[in-house]
Amino acid sequence: MEKNVQGGKAYGLLKSHQEEKLNSINEAFQSDPQYAEEEDLGSKLEMFKNKYMEFDLNDQGDIDIMGLKRMLEKLGVAKTHLELKKMMSEVIGGASKDTISYHDFLNMMLGKRNAILKLILMFEGMGKEQESKVVGPPGRKTFSDLP
Image (cartoon, rainbow, N blue to C red; front, side):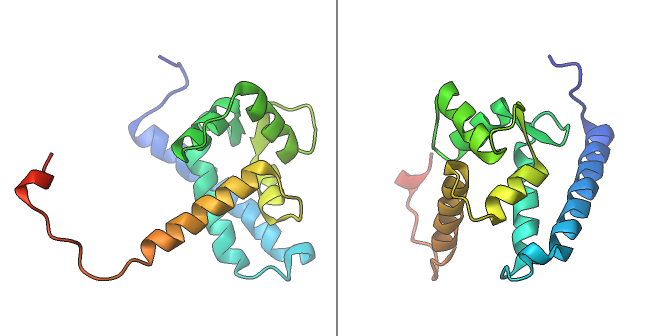
């Protein structure tokens, strides 16, 4: 078991502290003239923050290679270690780091460059939008449908 894993109140405190840090970065992006033309910037930043927090496994404010691996597996797009390293270098612009910071993540999602990770996350978001557009009552269930 990892020694840095926390639960209960300590974990909640850690997550709220992390969310405050990410909110301050979001505010900086909202006041950045480079992104003034971006549609629905506030809601996009909120969505990106939630997605980022979901996969920041080390709770240090960065997504490491295992967090990226878990993110892609959860989206049904498993990648090899080499592919993950290439994706990370695309996001961080070739810097010699082993993690993706929230700032790097936002630059990727809001920037013009089409990194593979950005495309995967965009298509995953589009799939969810289409799923949520299903209207009407759910289909009838029978006893044979029960687990």
